[in-house]
Length: 111
Length: 352
Image 1 (cartoon, rainbow over the protein chains, first blue to last red):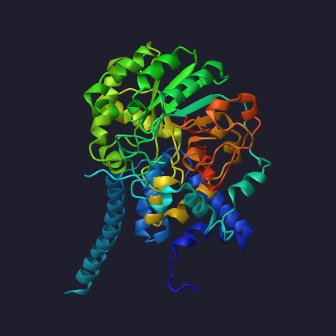
Image 2: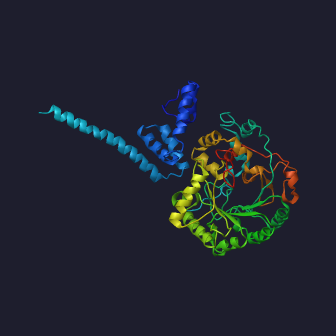
Image 3: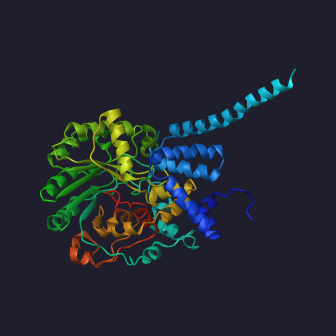
């Protein structure tokens, strides 16, 4: 067994998940491929969204994959970092907005 | 920033093509993790790879260059002294006058640095070749006063200029090609536009060559061309005709970079994963002969740098025979995956 939970080389083996469940694996990869096609949003915009989400869900494989994807698409480092900040802002906002719940509860419980 | 030195000047192990070829056949390929290129193309009955009709004669006028780009597959630079002699040029002219090829493609190094470059272009342009390309690194035009009139010279001989510009932004360009290269390239492009290149009605063609500045593959050529067109027009009022997206092949200084940055395996996996059998049909070695500064014949510029002469009775320009050459098997190795990934890659851009 690997001594670490994450091995960068495992990213190349992502497709292997279909080996243990061909039907669901193929459905997932078909869906995944379709999602990233040019649509109402450009493939470039989708790549930046994916990069931001990769950080929010803290997936090292996804971060590697979408940094490389961005480089291939000519997305520069400023654009990439801004996208990460968008993800970070939503993540911190999501934490902070719960502060309202805390305040409500505090007030409700206080005389 | 000091210029890098070529692998040759550093006497690096990789300056010996045999060591590069050995490296490309060992490791992940020897262990069977990735298939050898010959086995991969055999799956679709493309082995042995055979030429089709000859369309392009590509002449390398020498490895001398004013730049030392970190990705250069030629290992070119100011410290390289290999230059095509006038005698070899005369032999090439004889071939050009009689070839069935419709395109003549001059490359280097910086081909303009060959002392007989202008004489050769003048003579070659009389041969009636349909498309006469000079691959210019752009900065040469500003490198020395004696090159400042190159745009006029190219125009006079109706040369089709193909220029490297890795990106439309300064940081990536300079990182790959050296500090100050971007600003000089922009100036040179403006000079080419000023004499009529890429301007409507002039018939003077100016194409740009993009290659990724790192261990990743190029994206869609059309999308890149559009990004380059918009950015260069908005920021610098520059026009060009087409953009060729070229994949970096894992040889020479780019191979050195891949190994040093520990990107080699991932890069080879990416190339093999992106393998496209349709691209194999049209790889440039099937319609090109590459001629080195000393007159030897190769299937492509990459094989030239790896010292892989054509597999034919005819191996030198002095014995040139197009019919015999067209009957050869093309020599391949794992570097060829670079030309068959995604939409394929050639000196004329994508092929699939």
